[in-house]
Image (tube, rainbow, N blue to C red; front, side, top):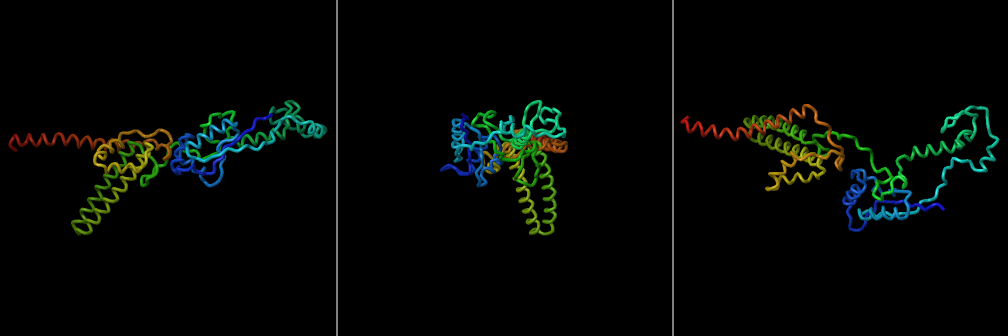
Length: 317
């Protein structure tokens, strides 16, 4: 007697006391996938998370989903007629005399013979063999319990598209990810552009103080917005929320958090904010090196200029 199989079904309903975002994060951690791929499970339609499970396997899988906050349920699978490669007695009696003079080759073993429903070499029913091959190829993403027995395996239903190896760069956006060198390079470009715009605003202020103040304010706001955008993308590279950029406003943490953003390496794999950033180009490396030279030059000047001033005052200049 064939063992009964069950499947796990989820229609987007949550357990009491669980928030939607928490359940999405829990499911992404459970299935070891990106949170954005879990969105399809909350489309309002019932989705089959796992199929062809024994009763014990279904209970273990269901318990893991309940702990994550998803109100999934199991239901018995309807028995399906298996595809057989061996001809039944009725088919053998009905088709024993059917044969034509047309040549054909067996799709399994390649045996050349007159066109017939059965291969005379390997004995398969050709029509059923082709139907089974089509079914296997169209259902290649479905995993059976024979190959994935763990209750914590990813769901057999497709929950998202395949992520690209590298994400798209979006300088003027709060989505995406950037690494340390690109963060330095973009910051240097923003600083150079801001110096030029502030220079133009100073010229306008010499002509009209009111217009100059307006230009100064617009340049300052634009500089703040762009710095926040690239800072959020840098935090996304760690897998952190962009709201942590507000730590720069905290008196104690604000002096150390920029160093964390500058020195901490990002995730090498896909995280919930997308694929890793593209490899650094030569221009990015050159700009990052120039920014480091600016920092080291400023530190060197801060150490040497006071000593030179004291020396000149001691010499009576």
